[in-house]
Length: 419
Length: 206
Image (cartoon, rainbow over all chains, first blue to last red):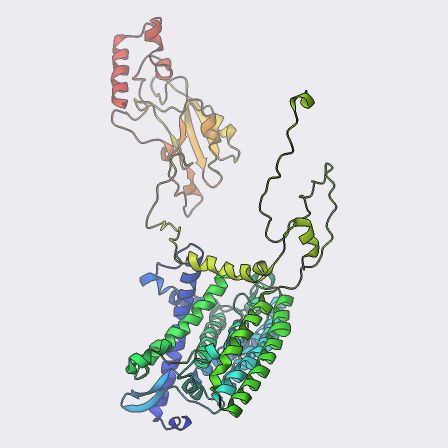
């Protein structure tokens, strides 16, 4: 597989680079529009619908507006770092896309070349490493602004990304064990028959949760919690520098979605075994359609999460990462390792891992959703006297309210008693 | 988890409440996506207001075109936002704007202050001041949002005549405010022409 790479003519490489860059930028503009439209629908609204067909040019107009705004640099800012930080945030976001496989080997202007810029034996590790560099942009931006809000936002962001990268990396280990490689094109090839998202469902779930934490998206958007930190790390940024952070966030969203597609949903392979009916589905440029379909599926989930969930409190967020996700991921790796060894030793179909996977997923869902016991707060004793209203019968109501029931009236008094 | 509250309320926070309820919230946003949005396409498509919507004011006229406002300033006194300014003046036989003694010479409503509460309408003794359904009261300068008398006066309907002009519906203001009382009583000795004029204008009004 890897020998397909590195033989392209220079103009093919250049063209691929330009195409990937263009796709990332257009994808960002589209995603912003799509997010606003979908969130609006989830809130009974319509969303941007004035500029261009269906409002599609809204994000372009916003981008132009951002570029034309005044570019402020705070007096207390460390100017060089302040300017470098947004660049440092946006470049890794784009670089990651270089190892994402968009499709198989195709006829590219007369040249036979895979629809992927390049691949490495450690491509997935490369993605993780480059994504970590993106954190520097946010942390340095927060620090160089010379503002408390920015600093706190940057610190939160670094803590958050580092915590969730652990769970994310652990989730990927099972995939490496099963694919036998860290190269993205080989991982996609290994999923020809069955997606890892199905046989290694717990890994998929852990990755899906941690990728939301990794991209600072709701409900894990603590670094830019506007109620607490104004704008978080980008409070002091304006104009194009802010636009770069914005771009980085949305490209990152696309990147982690593309990586999830590659590692868990079979990459550019056609879903639902359609290739058994139609062999051409996995050839030529058709895989682009399946790839971007899956990618947009993930983006839609991002939007759905944003439309449904409130922001987590910081300590809850950290507890979820360190006390739930990481132990679960570790346990799952042990199970995967044991099952893999047993399967290889006894010559059993390795896909039997799906059975413990389903069981573990059920355990995980319960473990993740079950909240910690609510603290027992002191409850005021029922008084019933004037300033304090009487407590509801049976004490304070918490959680779901009890259904309204009316006690049967006491036995009617006879006329003799009443009179 | 729920021993205390459980024994108090007689309910248990079971697995359903812990596991299913957080997930069920997602169904709300999911299904809402496919419902019809409630948005009105306002600047492109204007929906009619409720019939009694409190919009811009209007100064009404009598059927012959004379103003109903008598310059009493009760609206200005009733206004909680101090948005109305009225100066009354005397009508003369040569220059008559309203039936009776007085008319509103200056009438201003400041829409930067007005809260459209309608207390001025309740205060008006002659029904001169009412409200329309017009709600597009935005502009770019303070001056243009202080509406003068000519901005507020109701337009002249057919059969109306722009004041100043003499009273057309009778000899005095009673023929405007209590039409028909004198013919019923037969005590005020109104002329037949005036009665005829009154009859014709009421016909026109219908």
